[in-house]
Image (cartoon, rainbow, N blue to C red):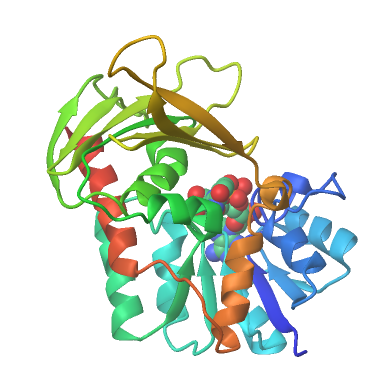
Length: 310
Ligand SMILES: NC(=O)c1ccc[n+]([C@@H]2O[C@H](COP(=O)([O-])OP(=O)(O)OC[C@H]3O[C@@H](n4cnc5c(N)ncnc54)[C@H](O)[C@@H]3O)[C@@H](O)[C@H]2O)c1
């Protein structure tokens, strides 16, 4: 088996730091690649010397200040871009002739104008880019979300950190269900510099109620999907999938209640990006794969932009 030679640009939190001290979890790109039997970590690039030193100390691989030098010297099959969103356009622009695979962190950018330019570059240059809205690659999540139907869906999102950082993951998942947005109702106005907002988003086939986490003591980020046939709750960290079916209520004539079926997906509990990398491997090896269409990514980011502006 030929391993996929992988280079990481951006050795910060998600590139390396998040599980640096923990040898069991695979939460960063560095440890995911390092421990994946189908991938080979060949190097890293970061503008910060300290991050490069940390990377070399733990992974015993060469690191570079300039990602262009890193690409020239290491000749990767896969480039992971885990730098801040405001750097993505410049980097994608510089990689416009890269013929192999790119895994680009979400969101595409910190503004819609640049996100559109990235999407157009990807299309024009026929770049092979996977976007790391990683929940979308988890089969149990996607099986639930991808049940296309004519039902009216009422969805609730609880999100932490910011619209772009966290709510974007959930909105991206739900873009599989919803058609074009009709209206956004602002529940809580966005204070200057505040990246959170509560809103109701109307679609012709349902609505999303978006609520930011006000209790800062712990993380809460989940999605609830309610329709006339089922109630589903998806949560990550800790992973938790609850699907409920409708059953007759024995206490009341014609009454109906929910019966719970809990599901856990242990395989992703400590390995968030496993399915993303598996899909990349399949893509390279001509097997069945999933890649989020760039048009759908753009729809999500357009929606975020609109929510920020109402
Ligand atoms: N998929 C997920 O679940 C997930 C989770 C967290 C963060 N992210 C995304 O990952 C990206 C990075 O986030 P983070 O929290 O790790 O940020 P971070 O600031 O902790 O790390 C970014 C690193 O990139 C480096 N960098 C910046 N410009 C560079 C350049 N031109 N060349 C090389 N290195 C450069 C910085 O020095 C820094 O070390 C963001 O797009 C963020 O939204 C995704």
